[in-house]
Amino acid sequence: MSNLPVLVLNSGSSSIKFAMYEAGNGKREKLFDGAVDGIGTAMGTFWIKDAAGKKLVDQTPPLPSRAEAFALVAAALNSADFPKPAAIGHRVVCAGPTIRENQLVTPQFIDELESYAELAPLHTPIAVYILRESLRLFPGVPNFSCLDTYFHRHFTEEVYTLPLPPEYAAMGVRRYGFHGLSYESIVHELEPKVPERLVVAHLGNGASISAIKNGVGVDTSMSMTPFSGIISGSRTGDMDPGVLIYILRKLAAGKPGTLEAADELESIIGKKAGLLGVSGLSNDMRSLREAIAAGNKDARLAVTLFTRLITKYVASYFAELGGMDMLVFTGGIGENDGDTRAEVCAGLSALGIKLDVAKNKSRGMATISAADSKVVVRVIPPAEDLMIVNHVVRLLH
Ligand code: AMP
Image 1: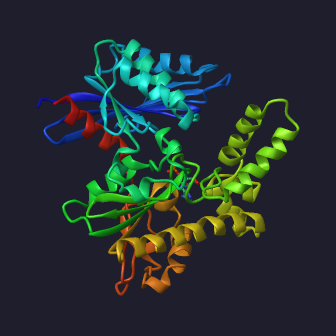
Image 2 (image 1 turned 90 degrees about the horizontal axis):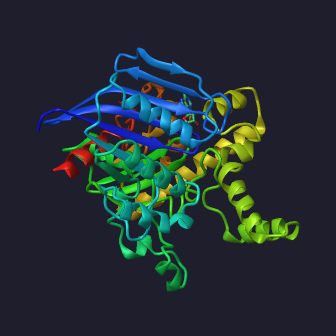
């Protein structure tokens, strides 16, 4: 295959990130990347940097809505300054029960995705908008949807079934799992020697843990939505469902419409909870570590809740996998925060996990376990974009 420029698009609530890769015959070379950030504000940022880090675009445009933001990206990428993409790969965070495969984006596919928007009201409407606009603004360029749920498609019935009457499963209520492109990239990095019993902790602003057997995802901490599992920057993670009913009743009591109360509840558990909610300070681990160093007790409690839950999940996956050959930390916190890794692993000493204190200070790719640890512990940065490029190249053929 000759070299093809493949554009990777990753759209979030306040930003659109993108990167162009040249792909051919196993080659994956980043040409440039960029982002529009601050959607919904009077002054956002729009930048593009080449592979050497030189800024090619550096603007602070008004970004009242996603429409202006994506129009800027499309206008720049359709200009003569950049190679025209041969294909576009979209990271799609959520799908529905019938959308399990990565595939060519068609208007029918987008309609189907939209029909499941209620399952993921914070993510799917954004994906639907960007996919429709991408077909319009890049005419003739094939677009592919690459799911964050794809890695988890082999779950057995007892893993994906949630304990509810079957009519809810028929509506799409089931465990999907997220961060799949990150998990896939860790397995890809470990190939051809993927350990039989692998646990990966993806600890970023959103956080989840997965049990992986012979390279196949068998369980994960997130469920139907990214709210579940371990606590994240601003999300609760697992919580007694009775708490939700209690809060919803409280909210609905002072509201004319219960639906509004449900929206508010979603905002509480998704945007005002987690590390931010407990610390009352920040969802950002760097700020929390600074606060802990200065003696802030709420920051200490927030981070302890976080690491304690990670320890519990890893230990449960040890049982589920019948042991553990390797534990991998990834994501912004997993890669950079040695204190989090040390606190999690201290809680796992009963499993024979031991860190090498000096090696744990390193950042980026490293093996950080002690020589006599029963489990190899590694740090591997995720490479989600590269997985998207790989899927696009495979699907183009
Ligand atoms: P991500 O969502 O993967 O970009 O990760 C974001 C999280 O990584 C935030 O909580 C950051 O505070 C955290 N993070 C990034 N760099 C560091 C660092 N040097 N030390 C501690 N946490 C970090």
